[in-house]
Length: 172
Image (tube, rainbow, N blue to C red; front, side):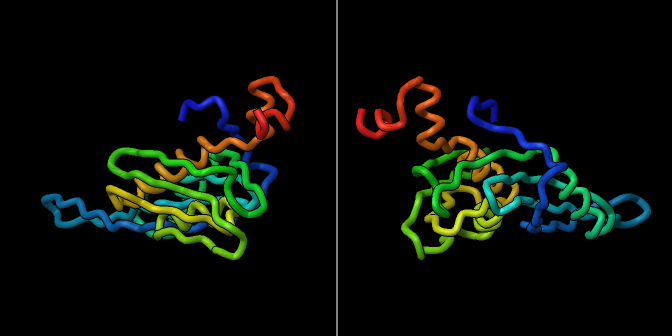
């Protein structure tokens, strides 16, 4: 995610809602028997354009979720949301997961599968069409979705980058 338009956000001044995407039970076999631990993928967002994801691992589910939330608050990004949808369509890839997100008209709702839905709802997008292709691994799908969201740019940002007036972005 070494992208120029990714805006990092400080987590101290924002109120977040967290969503647990997946919880895996991991078993380590030792000579003394089986040791169980848990890993949790968590997405946090303020439902107003800020989102982050995290992974927490611990011997108890609640501890794993708490660690995941702390981790998610450390890597937040700002996403442009226009009238409850996205500025343009975007595809992205992470490992084996490929995602495609597309703006939708008002009243459509969030049409997306499990892991993608959690990320898009945390961002605060109300109307979007999304498709996940390739791997359905929740870790990869969440990271691919956040990559796609980080590549989104609104017209104001493009006008500033080009050093032109906002009208010439649409007309020129």
